[in-house]
Image (cartoon, rainbow, N blue to C red; front, side, top):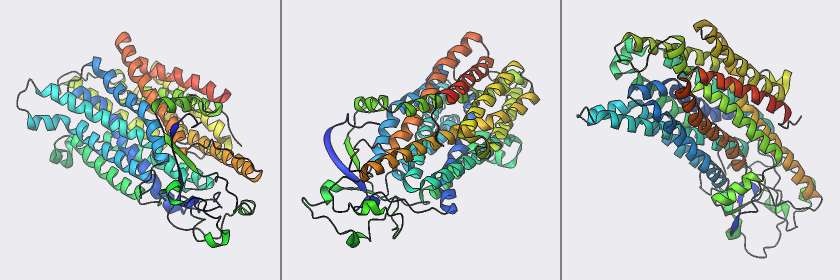
Length: 526
């Protein structure tokens, strides 16, 4: 994105990896173990997401949330995320923390996720312990639970951009593809385990009786998994902090002899040094010239106005990718956020507003548990193995098409067994949303870097380099915008129609529209 619209107050920053005249240096090849450790963040995040998807609607209904407040819950977090995520993405591109650019943000957002889970899964219990007045309990329980849902959604949606940018910063293009594959794999495993945990009837097990309710059981496992996974992730691949070259470089400093700076010029994206590899001999001949290196980054005072201008002026293929991502997530969230409620009310004919010891409510809970099994099937069947046969375009197209047909069939024929079978169609869709768009972003960046390298060799200079954090944030912003559309539109549709069947039909229609869009407008690179 074009950052030329930023205001003055300019500082030039370089990673320690980019010190010296050989600034176009590939990062070292990452071992499989490091990429697996890096992917554990996606395992923990998706595990907690699965718990929320399965339990957030039953939790909100159990504390007495009126249907009129549904939209408020689903809208607060995405509105904040949509406004702030590009700002955070841009800020992380220029973060000068000693721990690196992305990891401080990932740590802070992980703590916010943990706090949000604590509030929405334990809100009713906390209020019952603190407030004795039965007339005040429902209001406080609803407030605490809503706050927890908003906080968790905000942090969980935000964190995807820094995680992807962290991977892109420290890996070669081949390792980026491998890393995204592991991200998709562990995302599926985390979701499957989270839904499987929600499908267990903890009320009749010893651990459920010990901790109190199934909500406390979910919080115990979620907090444990999230904490362990994020510790592993943050220790996976070191980052190099940025250096302010305006402060560190004396004026009119004589050009360094390339041979004398060989101990520091090969670092890229990590604190370890990589010597005697990936050197471009043609760039080496330009070592004494005073050109700005292609990997150099410029920080400007970024305002919401200048950031929106930069986002609007993005290249057309980035814009089309963002639109396709928006359509896909609108369809996916429409189905996933209401799926367990759909199973409880429509398929099993339960009533979430009945007394908690009534037959109707117990039937509804049984439907929620079976819905968790369906979502578990969806997570297990996430696969990237089709890519060598159908390519990214084929996988993208198939994901949207199968999801549209599957959800349409579920909405028209709400039967227990056919619904569970159709859950298999969700897997390819989820795999595409978590991997294909980011694969394309990485390819777009690689293509731009090749063009910049050629311009540098030809004596040209391109100062319009964009940060990968901002591009990843722009893409993940579409998730927040999709939540805004789902929260604002579907709540109204459900109230008008009087049935959550309309949610599934809407998801099907959006997916089929997206199927045409990704085939006609998204740019693919061989």
